[in-house]
Length: 269
Image (cartoon, rainbow, N blue to C red; front, side, top):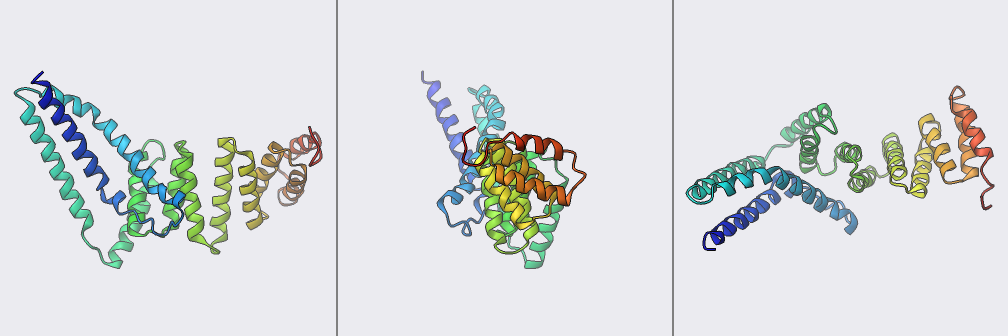
């Protein structure tokens, strides 16, 4: 019984210390969300922190079990190892906090963007997420970082995080860069479609087509999603436009047949 008490104290202490350290990681702790005024979007940072913390603890679970095996004569040795690890983390944290000049910041962002583009969305998920968050730390209004972060999350089935990242990228764009706006709306439409939110998918793909009315990819998605929603009017309008801008599209006849089988808007199927 007396041997269990110090073991529990050591384990609890290690967990508390590691959680505190992880929450102080600069790429997360300094993630600027001042430009995300809505409470819903402010939770975006919290979700990233929570998600990364869970992955961090999962990765260390095996190492914790090793520490447990040190109990007895090896307990002190195991605890010293953890303290050394925490000291390394602290040094890394201090290094990341060193101020940089505007020129250095721009150069660092460029390097991080190039590095993130080389990483695979699934195989290098954590490394790519970390690189993109560091970019956001350096440039909180970097649209491309939020856009890429959304794509990363979507590729890994983290739809809520993807939606928040893309929604914030749209807010940062405002009334500029229509090509990127329409592409983000298209991505959101695919996300809603995959999530089973057909109405959300239709609303967002319509926004993409409104901004870029001659993009065959968006028009193709508009027709398909309109058919899913049994919105015959939107489907017909989308098909007519798609046939105009991409007459060789192999789906035209199939789309036409599906639309003919739809009830008129307002009628029950």
